[in-house]
Image 1 (cartoon, rainbow over the protein chains, first blue to last red):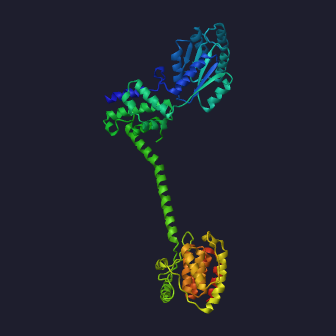
Image 2 (cartoon, chains in turn cyan, green):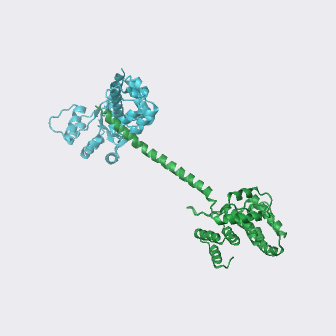
Length: 270
Length: 254
């Protein structure tokens, strides 16, 4: 019985981007709302940036999930690195035009100008730091036509921050930064995620002490937290199977296991 | 699949490593506290530096037994006085434990023999110190609220007043004056004792060392006086002490 609880809890923290797994936190909800509002504004481009694991992809996924029924919104989770493919994919998805051969920028621009749509389509580009400089320039030109609106998601590193600014300084009307969770937000995140999956027992096992330790190890990063807790519950399953569960305090999360998980996931270098 | 045993070993290593800085800090703190306590205690205990004088012990005790009848304590030096030069470079002369006990019990000032001849010299000597007492700001600092008036009186009364003032205030300047006064009155035992008291209060007063050494010479303990002077000279480099040492060695001072 106990093992099934840990199995369920473990699955909660599989590191996958699914809008259904979105956890609403107050501060993040405000940011999400401002992103939704920005899309309604006559903006050419919106930049969403932050460190890896801060929830940018989840944001885009949630946005697409919320708006795709109301307006034309297209999400590209993985970058289309080939320029030809990029234009062909956009042409097919937005304008329902299929090209068997190659499609260059000029041809695509003609399509865009010819097939103007009343409602400006929104294109969500994740991992935009992987696009080439040339393609980024083309995207800038496309946004200038005001026939397409782009939401660009970038990792915030020193270099990529500079790239974003250099390319889009005058064109970005809205920039939204996502950051790691605070300690209290992390606690809410973990407990909400577990309770959403009916893992109430394990949700109650997380004390302030264990949250403090998790925060210390992950600095509030959602991805690291997911990996850590996934490994943690894996350990609980193993201890339970080996009848070593009694060694651990059964009512609260063991700090020892948290640290062991951190060693396994590389958060602690032992 | 996770290798739990290996993870547990890694965890144990991690825990040991994480406690090392704490252990280092605790041990360092304890060491510092111990060192501080040691120095603090050694400072308290270093004020009695002792000069080893085995012969002096016997002679002085004999002489003191004679003079005790005429003089009030503290006069006895029944145990050797030692001089230590410790690592902190502090040198202090101290009397014996008995001396200190007796001194503390003193209520009446010592009675001093009067000799007309001596009065002349002491009076000459007295004038200067009295003037000094009046003029030095330290003495005024002792009794800031009281005004010091100097009147020409009998020297014994003057000395009694000074001794009473010293007993109240424990001012080493006063005890040094008393030592010098006794020395001038050829009361070498008293001079020796008060020089010791002065040194105990403040071991940096050169005068206490000089009076002490001179008194020792007068008491027939030339070798001990020279030993004391030599150690004081090594410690402080005092010119006056060097001059006195040379005078004692040459026989100029007897």
